[in-house]
Amino acid sequence: YFNVSDYVRSKISKVYTINVDTTDPLMAVETPLNTQSYDSSILFNVQVSEPVALELSDNGGKFSKLCNDCVAYSQKKSFKNGPHNLTIKATDPAGNSVEEARSVTIY
Image (cartoon, rainbow, N blue to C red; front, side, top):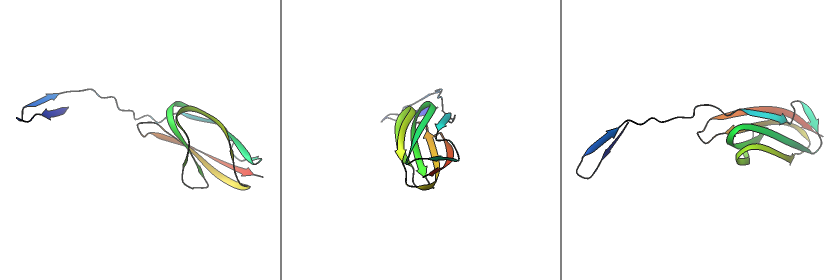
């Protein structure tokens, strides 16, 4: 409940029902496939159950934004040759998040 008072200190209290989102978004990462080798670029194909901020981390680095307020992402990204441990993170507006990890090699 909330208490509100005015300048003469009159108080009003009323009970409110608030719905709090505590459910993590559902994320399906179709590509990249885990433990696969790719040419210089990778097609990221990601579907999410609700609008989220989608981010990517490469080899434990800082997360970079892929899209904001999206439910699907389908874009190619280029990478340097070698192994890459990718983490894809989806965060909803309430702060709930889910992560998927993929290990790939670029040749």
